[in-house]
Length: 392
Image 1 (spheres, rainbow, N blue to C red):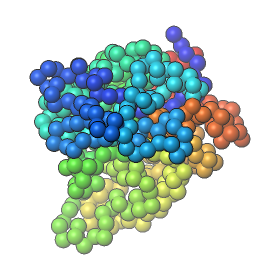
Image 2 (image 1 turned 180 degrees about the vertical axis):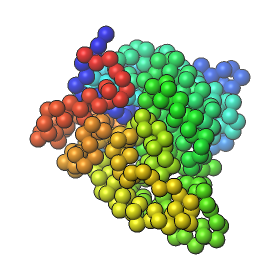
Image 3 (image 1 turned 30 degrees about the vertical axis):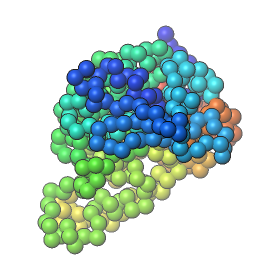
């Protein structure tokens, strides 16, 4: 049944204990899944193989706590907003004046943490268990309000395509890439298999902030160039891509990898939503990126074999990339420098930046001078269109 969406968050998180979904991990791998342990100070932590205990992250469980009352230790997950059942989540949306949320997994205690599982088979089994639970047990309670995103494994493009196809069959409204599809810290031709499949499946693609570059990816380059003479690479102060992100926030590197890697030239129909990026910095970065691209592309072509783009980098970003805006006055003022059609409001509930349950009065004030048609786009319509929701 069609639903009317007036205000929705394009970035919320499921900070649920792993015991909610780990029963779906095949028994032979279940002891490899993350699990909750209770600490002597009364707080919770998660345990996974080969890693120290991960205490409940106070930055991720701030919702509803008064300023100055929350502490960095001793947090019990069950006591926090945003950690309960699907029914509780819908009530929390109502309290904040939301009609729906796009639901990312936990970030600190989520897919990147799970990647510490040493072998791919149990790791992929954990990913599959979470996705199955998300679709069949959690989002099924209110599929028009709980817009879950399937998690892609950080292994290789073949595995990512297989999991995306599975998520499509489950009825999930989109997927979240934790790293580039090939699993490395830089783009490769292998990624094209995933981009093509996403278009064929008509599956919305999201990235939370940026492509993860921890673990084995930490010391990898951001790009591989056709010509990489070791002597020249050693003499360069920084590679080509890094010059273009000189004054951007961390998400700029991931976006530039897609642009300079020619992804949007080869797949102009591909759209990618980068959540929790903030927005105020983006107009300056786009201007800066174009300037520095023009300054550096000549030597990059000659020395590195870089194939020049057919258009300026910012043009691909404005056409193919979407961003979120939270409670940012400057971002609202600069919205036209990015494009109103490519901006989605988000609360980041239940993380530290959210203002639950007071989002509505805050944004009413922030958007007081914004035309109604632009409000509708940012507050709901853009997300409805991107995730193909059944709107009235």
